[in-house]
Amino acid sequence: MEIPFFKPVISKKSIAAVTKVMESGWLTSGKHCIEFQDSFAKYTGAKYALALNSCTAALHLALDAIGLKAGDEVIIPVNTFTATGEVVEYFKAKPVLCDVRKDTQNINEKLIESKITKKTKAIIPVHYSGLPCEMDTIMKIARKHGLKVIEDAAHVTPAFYKNRPIGSIGDITCFSFYANKCITTGEGGMAVTDNKAWFDRMKMMSLHGMSKDAWNRYDKKGSWYYEVVESGFKYNMTDVAAALGVCQLSEANGLWKKRSAAAARYGKLFKEMKEVVVQPEMKGCKSSWHIYPIRVSKTIDRDGLINHLAGKGIKTSLHFIPLHMHPFYRDKYGYKPDDFPTALENYKRALTLPLFPGITEREQKYIVNAIKEFIKG
Ligand SMILES: *Cc1c(COP(=O)(O)O)cnc(C)c1O
Image (cartoon, rainbow, N blue to C red; front, side, top):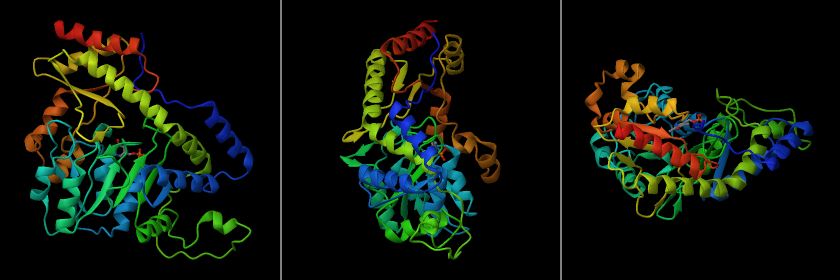
């Protein structure tokens, strides 16, 4: 059997919607972006949403909007993708790495205050695997120290923290619509916020720092005149992508249900296996189940297991190689592997199993049996 790591679900309806845009004569940012933004704001409970070409762009614009400067510091979890750190580097500011919790592998909120200095401007919690971070504590720490909270919600669409949707809690929340994320536009992202000034700044900076956006410029009511008021970026989403995004968002709850059901099936299949630890359920939280990471006990040869599964046609992945283990961060800041013991331990013991809306019970049993087989030796 061949089981891919991920398979996106692209409905007939979305193919028709994208085709219609391609035939319309207007391909870049326009009414479909506006529709996607409006529906995404409603979905996440935020006032404003800005459609962009990636989550990395959203994080960059968010840090610009809160006024991050060279020499500032931003606290981020060590167990994340490099995008979370690189956006801080863009400003010649310092990503201050923080170890994670043993249970969720999310940023350990108990360690955050020990990382705060006079230079700290923000915290970027990452909702690892789609399981929300301990947001009440993080917001309390941020408010006490005058810090902003920019959420990296690349794994989220949707997730809930104490019945509140992710997107309605932090100062700015950034989502990803990369090809293998919960919903996709091929490449894409969204920044949401309740703050009009930040939204306006992000919007202006996403399109060259121009005081008018492209679609107003060519509108009948618009004019040829525009002003460049900043040296901005080119981060806008196309209408082709947004049309796909609108359809994907309308299907997001259905996709979520299927991923959640598949995650519950894995949970049951692993229940009796003491050698395998799965992502926990946190009280009052609902995970998006973007990915299904597991950790095997020290007695199991993890690399051998990955090879064994590959030999059985099962594609796996690993989330994440901790940032301090990558040459860039290691060499620039002089980190040693055991500077972040929990993330290091996760890195040694973890692998991520296939999880996507269409995965069948038969495929999941095949995967779990292959793992059992390896463990029994
Ligand atoms: C995918 C991912 C990103 C980047 O998303 P893009 O849309 O590809 O820029 C950022 N953070 C995390 C944790 C991710 O997994």
